[in-house]
Length: 249
Image 1 (cartoon, rainbow, N blue to C red):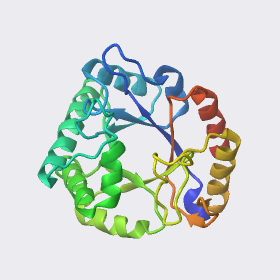
Image 2 (cartoon, one colour):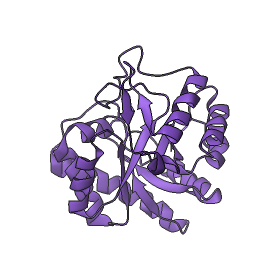
Image 3 (cartoon, rainbow, N blue to C red):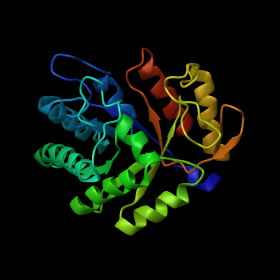
Image 4 (cartoon, one colour):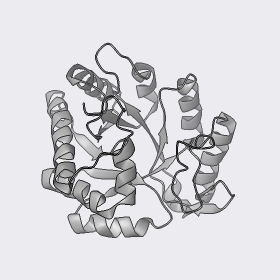
């Protein structure tokens, strides 16, 4: 597994401002990440923010991903919504198409899809939702990849994605604690997030060199890792991202 984990790229959720409400430090952080997950208007963002975000990513040669979520601006897309599979396919297509229009304007493309918040969690929990999202991507452009949470049983997701002709990107979270089964500790629990930056650095160094992260009960989780997610809205986000970049390089 060690060889698979040598080239790990940083991804960051970005473009999540809305109207006069600003979120994150996109202009400062964009030069230090490889992949930008850009909100598409359902959980955050608006047409002007989307346009500016694509322009910013293009300026720094950052790979663009669509970050579609449930239609829930008030809850920031972190609440599950009871949608039919047809609805899920349609909302992903709608958001992917909207971001693609701005990419076309700036002579670039959407390279992958990373569902946001509750939609991401629901995709990992429910195979039918996972398939609906794969179907949406495949019907639009099979060159677009799908970013999912890396788990110890990633082969099962790989097999399903192959049926749709879609490739996967496996994501690991630097500052989130993991359960023994490879799922993320729920955000409602006090130990969901790791706030000690040195501990986060050590975890990612260990992942890169040895191919595993430790769960909350110190179980070794061997994970395939294409990319590490960092959060760009923290107080020390920029310094943290710069330090992580050094660890990965």
